[in-house]
Image (cartoon, one colour):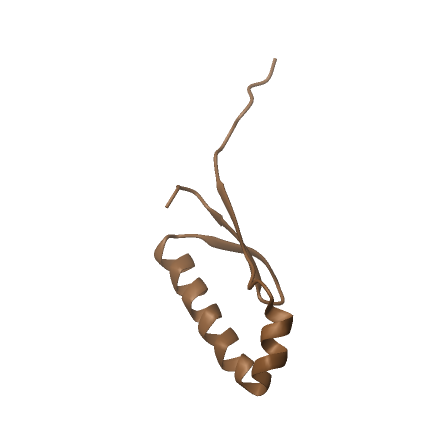
Length: 68
């Protein structure tokens, strides 16, 4: 029989809860908030050696090799 390889990963998903309502109330200022959010997320992905698997709207799907 063949050998089975296993690996452990941390799957991490982010989402700004209520982002549609927040965007409506902030109007054009929401772009500034979203940009800051994205900067914080991406800088921490790099810091902790993660990898972005997918992005949808304001959400990130990220994988890490080790628990943070």
